[in-house]
Length: 300
Image 1: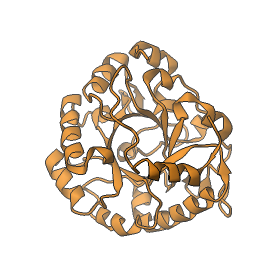
Image 2: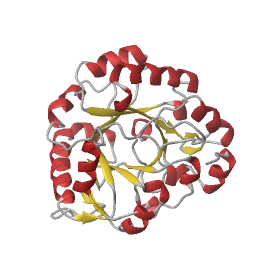
Image 3: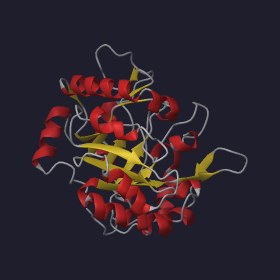
Image 4: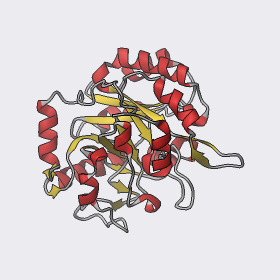
């Protein structure tokens, strides 16, 4: 999910891209509650489980009505980006301007947080420097956990996205070992090898205590919602339901280049295809306006 240059619209990297609580306390609660398995498979009237936020300067003050879709979990793609920290990390320069974390933590769509660690705006750079990013991520997690922050963090996310075209991806198994759990990565099928082959590949190297956010590919017309739902069925069955969630791409290519928000007519069947799997919209601040929320007409 690589963000764009500052003047562009965010898109996945592969396309060219309420109480104050200490993070440590949040992780302890998560571990007691069973680690990865906290999203649940709610179904009901909720359209989504959570919202992704890919912080950049254009979305540094995110506002939305995403709780009306059922969202109560915020996936923050990174806390350090290109060597600048969005949260206080001693020894790391601050990203400017800083988010208003106290307000964000009080939002109903951020009751719990999956906190991204150290990333890079460029997928190529991220893959090239993955060992350094993993080491920095361990340092960042430790420093953030050692101080009070106004977020209830129940898990971490390592923002180097994985697909079968990345031949060195299996090296992540060792690089991610020092990072705190619960821990998630995101996966997409850039080669369209199919869900069974993708599951085989992941099972061959991915540690069993790391969860997967699967990017559905619908936003870039890589597959239809029906096909993406088949991926969800296979991956969830093979990895285990507690280790699987979907990234629902809430954008579409624009004529002439760039990306636009998906229309309600495009997004409704996409969300509906995924039943009650945990579903995270990518991404709220860039693509999911209050008008789109109202048009989706999710009733809580």
